[in-house]
Length: 99
View 1: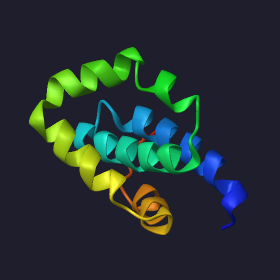
View 2: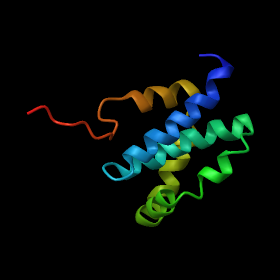
View 3: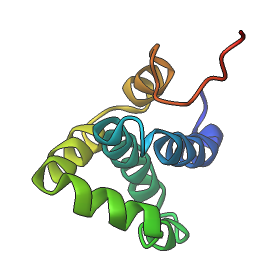
View 4: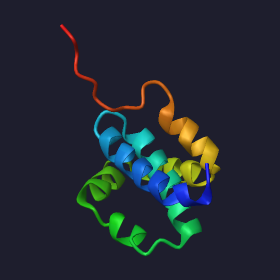
């Protein structure tokens, strides 16, 4: 993975966090931490606007202190750890059943 991939990875982690917010809120907070860590490393000016989204406020309010802890765990991950975490089975994204 090159340095040029990092903005796309950060945006993808942010979207995965949004998908995980309802079924797996702690995972969503951790993915937000991963994305935020990358955004800070890249000095991404768009990153600040992402943190004001309503779903993040609801997630923060719903989790309380667990949000802070999970987000810190995500922010401490390396790029490769964050990608591995995002790709783990059971990512929290809803998968339609095939019945």
